[in-house]
Amino acid sequence: MNTVIQLGFYLVLMAVVAASAWAAQKLDKKILLIIPIVALTLVAGLRAETVGVDTKSNIQAFISCYYRGFTFVTKEHLYYLIAAGLLHLWGNTSVVLTVYAGVIYTLVFLRLWDFRRMVNLGIASALFFMFYFGGTMNGMRQYIAVAIVFFATRYLQQEKEFLFLAAMMLAFCFHRSSIIAALFFFFYIGIKRVYGVKQFFILFFSAGVAVPLSIYFLRQYSGYLSGASDVDFGLMGSIQLFMLVFTYFFCRSGMDVPALTDGEADTVSFRLMFMITLLGMILAMASFVVDYASRMGYYFRFFEIVYYSMIFQSKWIGRNVKFLLGAALFLLGVYHLYAYHGIIPYHTIFG
Image 1: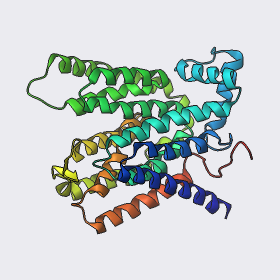
Image 2: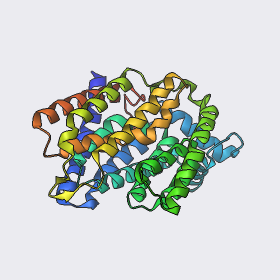
Image 3: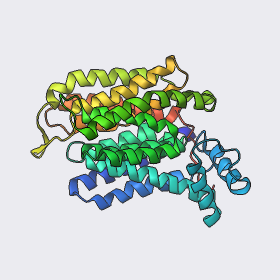
Image 4: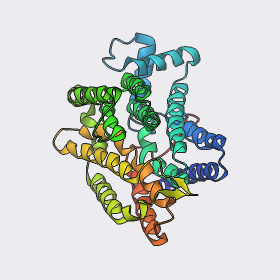
């Protein structure tokens, strides 16, 4: 019964987050996004160290860096340096968790806001909560990098490739796996007969660093990831891959219209979101060959939030299809909340 109550707590929180985001979209009031951002930040930041598989080890690492320096840190010093600085100012590890949570959720919701004309923001927020909120309370270091990359893809859409590159380098300071995000250049620049000098240089750079540095990442993190069984591409991943491919071929004819809502042109194609998400799934499947390579796919799988939300926003997809898809995603999402990341039961630092 306690587990059911705890799961109910998360579902109520999800409803608040989704309803707030939906209201922000309907009223076109960006300021209302502060409600889901603050709600998630407080829940994640004020959690007890027993909530989440990695929370206790993260807190111990912060304290060790503050009192003993960074001699044991071999990579991504910025993550621990900021944590030690916050501890120096506030003397409380919950402040560190709150600040990092706030960064993640702010970047995610601001990026989702960019898609408000083509996605159902309430559905997008619910999907983020069910499939990724638990992860953000565990692998914080990588999820900060994922959130930075996710937010920075707006610059690729605006053809500001060097701004994206700068953001990718910042993400690299938090988690070296973000180097794989160089592949985003290929998606957004696309296949052309003639490339400009800037585009040619960026594509050449992407091809030159993404693959070798990703192999380096896998070698560096193989030991660290040896106990992270929840990131393997197992049954859950297989079901999600099937749903992705099935929904694309079933819904694509209804998503090819030039306008999705209110006569406004679709600036991000359904096909692009599918291809990015599919790459994330394929990288996740690589864990069958290379241990724990699924972490490389996080940067691309995040876009499944946008992909599915586009279907729910489309006026050309039938209600029955939306209902069946929503029911399937909800059941998978509830199971994901229950089974992964160790976030049940939830307790705060106050007891």
